[in-house]
Length: 286
Image (spheres, rainbow, N blue to C red):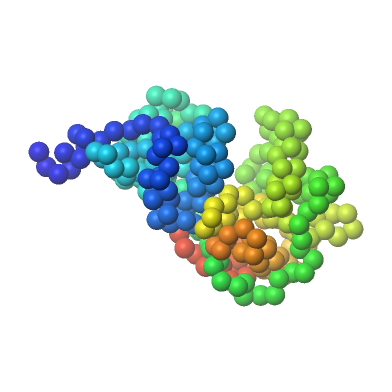
């Protein structure tokens, strides 16, 4: 029996429990920016599936945890080997599709989707090249002093911008299949958590962004949006510098995001603010 054959013969897949957290943390620590989303879900829930909104599956070779995958509203692979991806895909087919997307490192997502597409396809959209950008030093431009935390009494001001951004980015409304009250509660929670920032002028949002996933080492910016009437005026880079400055001071030292490759104006703004590309993600949207 070859080494590869022996590894396969002694391999297994199972749901991870809180007792597996030290070994899972070793996987997550290999790339805190890449694995920020899963680290956030794991630590915010103490790996209790009812709080996590899903499960984390682990792929073991012997007693060693080699790969993992978060299985909830998204499928997100973590350090997934070829054998692990095959096992994750096989288990996912048996469970049936319950997620709204597959997101993560481009090569791992591509292989996972290749295995799942015959039974789960077609996808609503395949975004195979999404640069991951990160900032670990001071921003390169002066932060916009008018970008600040959104107050709880400004929920109704922020809501239209959140809906417009999501619809523009994802292609469907965030309240498609979900009540407005549920979505409002979600945005209200982001505000209460001190993770919604915006520039608000005369009762309307002209720039906004939220800080979504958070770990001890990194955080992920999401929902970046500028009022269409204000685009092209150079607001994005100072606005992102303000968001990054706040995040580095109050949340985590590494600030990251991922962006569609075709959104060249956003990518230029992030580069101007001091972000650099560190990785490439892919998203399969259902």
